[in-house]
Image 1 (cartoon, rainbow, N blue to C red):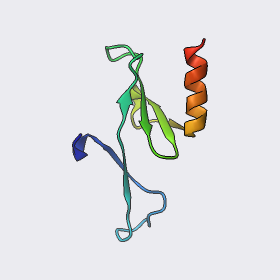
Image 2 (cartoon, rainbow, N blue to C red):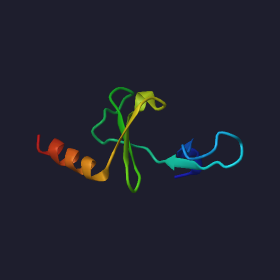
Image 3 (cartoon, one colour):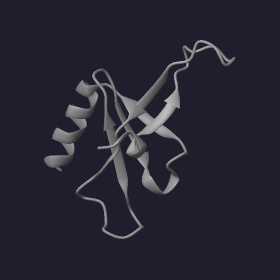
Image 4 (cartoon, rainbow, N blue to C red):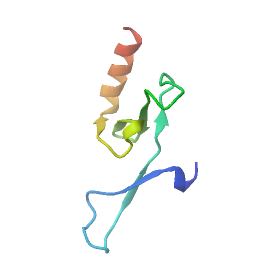
Length: 81
């Protein structure tokens, strides 16, 4: 994956000026259960301590962040439903 395919954003711990700045990148993956068209698409990005989820139609919109443990519990529940 190239750096241009990553979703870069400024860390909330960075200063608001042009000096001390840290950028973080998330590598988003589309769910295999999402439709093939531009309709129902769920994407996730895994980090060591957080799983990020979003609606791909609203890539800059709201995101949900959960712990890996919570995500694992959800996946187990969904698989058994």
